[in-house]
Image (cartoon, rainbow, N blue to C red):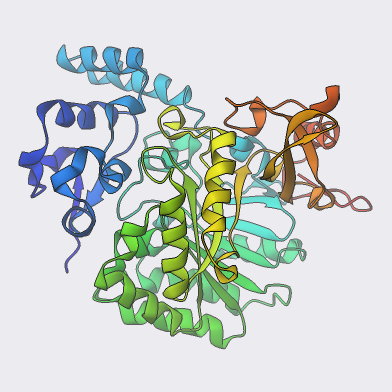
Amino acid sequence: MKFQAYARHNLNKIPAYGRLSQSQIQAINIVSEVLPFKTNNYVVNELIDWDNYKNDPLFILNFPQKSMLRPPQFRTLTEMVEKNASKTDLARYVNELRLTLNPHPAGQLEHNVPTLKGEKLTGIQHKYRETMLFFPSQGQTCHAYCTFCFRWPQFTGLNELKFTMKQPGLVVSYLKENPSISDILFTGGDPMVMKASVLEKYIDAILYADLPQLKTIRIGTKSLSFWPYRYLTDPDSDHLLELFRKVSDRGIHLAFMAHFNHHRELETDAIREAVSRIRSTGAQIRTQSPLLKHINDDPQVWSTMWRTQVEMGMVPYYMFVARDTGAQSYFGVTLKQSSHIFNEAYKQVSGICRTVRGPSMSAGPGKVRIVGITKVQGEKVFVLEFLQGRNPDWVGQPFFAAFDPEAQWLDDLVPAFGASGFFFEKEYNKLVKVDKLPGHILNTDNKQYA
């Protein structure tokens, strides 16, 4: 199949365009002024159930919905469009609106961007000691955009909010300066939109550098779901798979971090063949997704997804809580519901599926898992723990938050038992307020990282 993208300017070229109501078309056009919209012919033809599109999770996953903006925002934007407001005024309002949507949650821009010899590396994030994120500039788009995407600023005109870099030499230099880094994660956007020859230049620079500490190259991608033909019939698909094989042959673990949000994405012949071809290179496919209202807030969806992934040879890895950015008001699920959905799904699968961890919040201090809800000393509490932390010493330490049935994020919680703060708060506040940027060791003896 040949790739064909659809965006707002060519919405009428979608084969099922005639099924969309005028109000739905208006909503897509209005909301996509703020949140980016892009889909493609594979998603449209093979994943979406057009007989029930209004409630179809894959339709909602790809096509902006009216309720993804708050009513006053939608009304104001609609009035501006209908009254033919000037491009300058429209752009100004859209950018103001975007800035209210928390474009970089968890301090990504303020606290995760490191420096090298005084130069700020805006294409790198280094939050956790062992793992570095790299944003190659040619990979800062996707085959289709998820409406919930927490990296939506990468696809808008707000250039000052983007992460991007195209100097592999700086990546290698930073890795050499930070021998604690064992894993590099290629992310975006989606690295798999790059030509194999372009990706190979980045990979080769890392493979052939003297980096004895490097054990894993990770690739974060939605391409398996939204364009499996990337690994089947694209002109350079064989070249891409040979590149994966090269990584494995060099003794580096290639972790293919695949994003699947619903089991429907696993049901086509193309996805099954693509998974088989990727696994044949020695790469291991791990799967992850946020928990999303309107998409997968049902234990049955998750248990089916995990079982199917294992059947196909993939490893369930993470269930995330939807980040506090973009259309979170539309997609957000309470922590109480998140815990229930995870536990009910977890009960339904065998031990071989229970590699999955969650529900996890990728918050400023680190990845915080909801272990469960219980009573301690007569008080109902959330039991929490760090799966990753800005300070590695936080990992695995259980802590307690007062139960709040409406809480959706770590910031909504307060410590249990009348405590003045969570155990990590003072240190975290110190870490994110220091002059040195993230990625630099602040105190070698205490292993404190920002």
